[in-house]
Amino acid sequence: MSNNSKITANNSALAVENFSISYGEMLAVDKLSFSIEKGKIAAIAGPNGAGKSTFLKGFLGLLPTSSMQYSSASILGHSLPLSKHARLKISYLPQESSLDWHFPLTVLDCALMGSYAKHGWLKPIRRTQKQATQAALEKLGIADLSKRPISDLSLGQRQRLLLARALVQNAEVYLMDEPLNSVDAKTEQTLVQIWHELQQAGKTIVVVHHNLQTLPRYFDYTVFMNKQLIAAGTPKEAVSAENLRLAYGVDFLL
Amino acid sequence: MQLAFLSDFFSTGNLVLWGCLAFGLSAGLLSPFVLLRTESFFADAVAHTSLFGIAFMLAVAPLLLLLFDSLLSAAGLDSNGLERNNFLRSVYLSFLVFVGALAAAILAAWSVSKLRRYTKLKNDAILAVVFSSYFALGLMILSRIIHTPFFEYAKAELRAEYSFGALRRYLLGNPASISLAELFFLLLLMIFLCGYVALFRRKLAILCFDVTLAKLLGLNTRSLDLWFSLVLCTAVAVSLPFMGVVLVSCMFVAPALAARVLVKRFTPLILLSCFFSLLATLGGSLIGSTFSRFSEASATALLICSLTILLLLAYKIKQALRSGQQHQRPKQSYQGSKKNSNYYAS
Image (tube, rainbow over all chains, first blue to last red; front, side, top):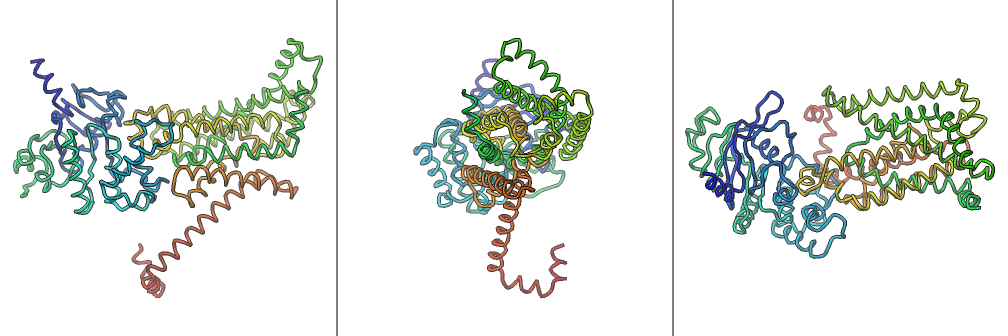
């Protein structure tokens, strides 16, 4: 039995058991248990206020530890609270609206931030470092904007920049908070294509996602939740008519 | 001896010049971070509360000075070198004032964080209440100092530090009257801040822009936060004799605000902010020394603030012109029916 659990732990990129988060009296996440295998493009889906973003934040240690309870929680086999070493394996794309886009930075400077930890905080920025960052911007189709201030970017370009910064970070697991929110179809395609490239390189991608229609097209694993876990599995399995009624309380046709 | 050389080098005129340089550079270096961390009001609160610390220290300073004198004589230093002893005393006194100001600033920051945790009030309300109460306390002590028996003694011993005008300068600032000791503290602050910003600018930039990323990249954000607050408190405490409690915070905000209008990158922002800040301190001193009735501190503050406002206005006008060119027609039609446009705007 113990042997068995060890194997699953080794295979899973992200695993939680009885994971709860509370804001004061209110329970935002209620005894969540699931695990996402390595190399998957997984979605965390559910209605508004289901605690999806809260779960990610709590998992990353961005919420006070007193608000969280769990019997086990780990990422790539590193259990919470994450060590400095473990944190470097994670890249997190915050919700676009959570950042101050009037901050005095150029697009290149912003993307370079992802490489600070590996290249050192004090050394002058090396040419190779700059080239790698420029290449990431190129991949996302915003290389021509690299010298512009980030305040000039459109919504879609901001999401591209955030993903470029994550690429520069070169992590193992990518956690993204609604990256496809209010971006146009072309940007959506670019982003999803990069996810697939990352997947081929053996990385794991976990995305908080709203749009139920696109779930089967973009993801090969879905955690469907509304404070509690409703279902986890392939998108079709997880988001069945029965589960939809459980989550939203109304009948849906997809 | 050495001291004679020092006081020649830092003669009164030079003293002010060096003070302007040291304070201007310090304020310019720190202000971008204060601005981007949205701690402008915190800086103001810190400055106001430090008056309490200064007043307290000035009240007990004569006693501590007696102690210092007896220490000097115990060390056998009282017989020779009156000039040096006076210099040491002045260093000692400036240091006391600095320690008092810093302690009060830390006390204020601590009270604010405690109140925030236990009352769940909004930040600005807490800051306003805390800083005005400490400020009032400081004013009360300052006005009492003049009536204490110690005051007569202190006035006789240290005319400069205990005249009524000298007490007032902590309130309103007076760059022209800084002592050699205070200048040394300012120079130390400048050197320290140059190092601090050079070493920590990337970490602080990430901390301001994206705390989550800072955490994931392995930074200890809590200690960075704490250290920045401490550095800010120190900078304010050292600058008080120069700019005064009331005006000092504007120099820790406005230079970066003015620079922010013109540049959209981080390092140029710091450099331009230093330039503006130096411009203000030097220009302010020049105005102050040319027109004898003008206080240098207020001239400095006035310069930097008017510069900021002018730049902001110019930027707004430029923007309005640009958007006016782009949407000339709709704008004209709005002007034609003002009531309608108001209706839509609401």
